[in-house]
Length: 176
Image (cartoon, rainbow, N blue to C red; front, side, top):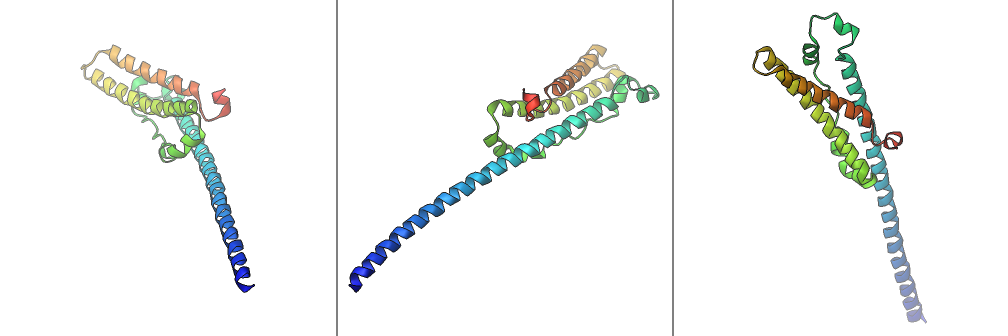
């Protein structure tokens, strides 16, 4: 009887051990899935906040360099010179760069394309301003035609309009 009891006990122990291993693996998968969802939601929230911050910085910059601004009218600078002395904001890209892989898991391909476009347009906007300021400086030295200066400022204005019009692609009201 002792040997049969030992064999039955060993069989029951083996079955319980197998069930415990499977339950542990299943619990671990559920926890990993929950952690992945949490990382994705956090990444989305961080990038959404970062885009909002960049949009606010753009609005502040545009208000500061607005050629119709009464404060600017009291200065001795021309419109283009006024823009030249106000550097574009240092756009925040940390959340976008660090959370990209987590954001990819939780955003649609359309949203990702729009977010990528947003950050690309911000960089292009800064480059357009830098180019316009360089052309303006060269114009003052009579090295380039005024039409080139105007064209570069027009590109900057169009990029600003495009960024403002698109808004935050991760906000539901912007995507709708």
